[in-house]
Length: 160
Image 1: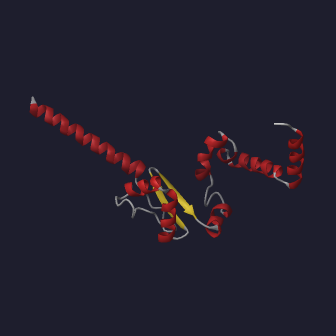
Image 2: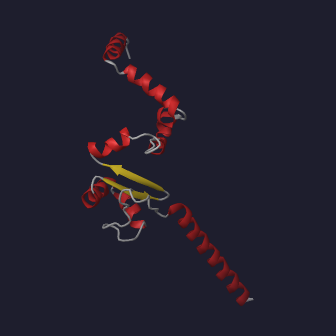
Image 3: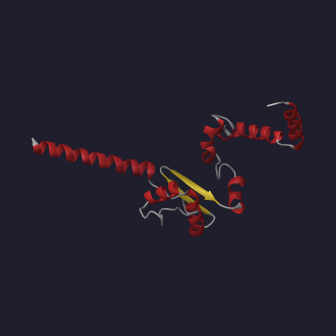
């Protein structure tokens, strides 16, 4: 009976290990982005464990990590956090890539998708491209000087 129990335990351990490795391989491991991709941060000088150290350092102090990565990698670098890759563009020159590139080159959908929890579904950043453009135009009109003056006058008349 003990040998059967030991065999079942070994097989169970095998399948648990296999499952964990498969989850890491398909969902969590960092992937390269091609020859033109920014440098991928895979090591941490603060927590010297591959991949786990990067996540630990980021969760511990994201500002310090970004400062370190800026010094080590330059204005553009990618940090893998679990199953997502976050690419940082530091400074106006680097950020121009993001704001001026066409959506087929560099999509704004993925990084802005997390804003759904702020604005709600299908609003601003979570909306399809066409709808998003209309919403941006509506918001931009609201920030024109004449619109702001009209709103200021209306708000001064109201008592809160």
